Image (cartoon, rainbow, N blue to C red; front, side, top):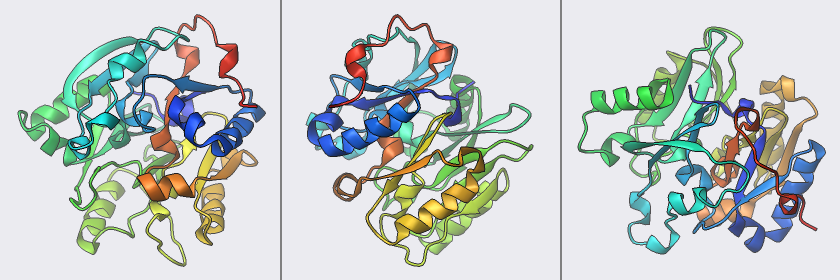
Length: 300
């Protein structure tokens, strides 16, 4: 069964983030150090977005590697990472990986579960377009087998090039039979937002983020980093930062005093990704670590 973010206790980043954004990297490492975390650094990456190309943990030391060949990098091949190169250079542990036939970005996999240990994954229907050799029924069946979860399909707004769900929804908790989620729809056309809202409300208890001004990058607040011990919320350097923090603190009361905000406006503005996109998270308690490298600890 695919693991949700609140079950993870190790965070990896592309080595490029530390090299190109040293001040942001230092802030990230400082937060991680509060909780005894070291920041893992992935090598042989060609962009920052390791969430999309790294394998998905489905329990114990088992991972699923989806095909990675996003259409938005068709003309930008120099930025396309070969996941095999990165995975084989992980020195902390050797993940047991099964390969999927499907092309899926990790940013299109938002995991939610409930008190009965039922699990859902929220995806946009861009996955259907990316896998034309299979029908929707076939893709759904394959994903449910790969991930051990039920699939909730959201419509894809084609103006959203990546078509990922990690800027639309984020899991809050599974304290009842209906999981709670956080969502932000305001930047989508009204008809698509209405359909997303209905589809999600059928399965989840949905809490929408609301802002005084719906600025173009407010989706980034949903794209936060969460582990079992802390949350890091993207900061955009606008008035919406405080509004986002207030709402997220109310939605995640179990993390009281453990929710942090780091300004990453230059990254969001230039590249269109935030903290969930920037990270690959793992539950190390479910894998056999050979060692934790000392040099993966804090930046000076």
